[in-house]
Length: 151
Length: 329
Image (cartoon, rainbow over all chains, first blue to last red; front, side, top):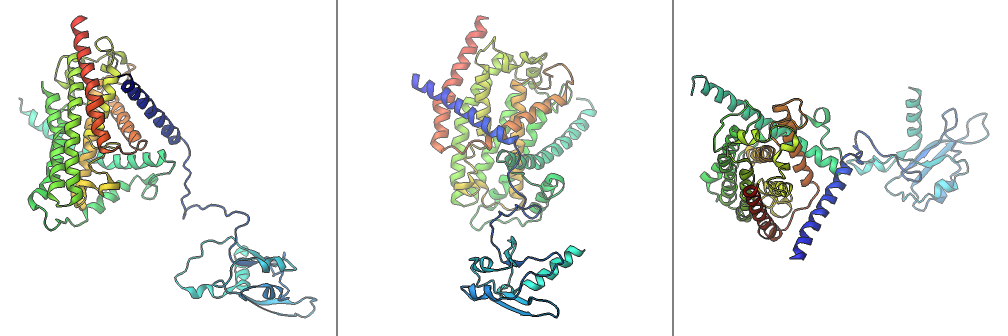
């Protein structure tokens, strides 16, 4: 008899505790992020495909030295460059990344003598077609970013 | 009966039908928003400002769907079940006293009539489950009947306790008996029954169970029975069940307000009338939503144990206690 009484009163007490907890959560800010409208900031060390860094004038820092191509374990980088007149260093004309083979190991970023390439934080990388990731053109990407900045 | 009486009743019916429809639509919105907030989500936000047009979009979707009768189902009963669900819910609204003057029919046996109407939905859910020829429906129908039989008893014992305190079956007279400040409410009628708050809690639990709300939503139990008795219903067939369910919640909450919380009377002395009735009503509705999103569903034997082993003994005890107190005082 005493046990039943204890069980009923104790049980009811635990129910009120639970309701107190949910009411406290009710008045707190929602923690969900409404994805297409707002998105989380990617962490500092997030690795997505390579992009160029640029000088102040918007040109690439890449000197087409081919060190990244040699460092790449899966041979997914193709670089071409030319020596413009009146300049000491070579400048890049073509930098294609085969993202279907890239394992984001970071050997290229580490080896780069001029810090011309970094990992981007682009994570909205959905496509209906695998072909879209065979060639990611870093030169064109830099041009497009410069254009956007100019506007 | 004067000549104006039928017109007044007709207008009241239109008003009640509107109230029930809007309530069902926007209680779904309140429920989803509340569920979101209790789980620290935002709830519906996309359709209209803060998702306010979501119920209208939902209604449009439900109405544009085909009404399918599954093969092997009992066609007549399958169609009849949602039709039987809605009218008792609307009829019960005619008896609720929203304020001194705003009441459809002030019957001297209003409380009994109200319970007769609100117990009707059990039959409708049972028919729906049985006629749809679906294993989930059958299980749900069996559950809903045993659940409602089990919870009708403590509910009635609690009602008798309140009746002995107020001494009348008329809903308006019960509310009139609680006029004045809030310590005159039946909830605080400690002089005639010191266990009145306990009685109120038992009434609330029974009300949750009678309206098939979580944690007692044995009839719907979506994680085990898909949607229970409503599994085979498509479009507005399902929509009608949904509307009637929310109408029943409002009726249950209104009954709690009338019987325990002083109906339309103001607790502090300002703004009497329909305003306070609705404030108390929606406070009760919020309580129902709050309970739903706090507790998980009980197991079925736990539900029956709660009724037969705990609620019925306690409510018999409070009944006897108030009988003795009233006799002595």
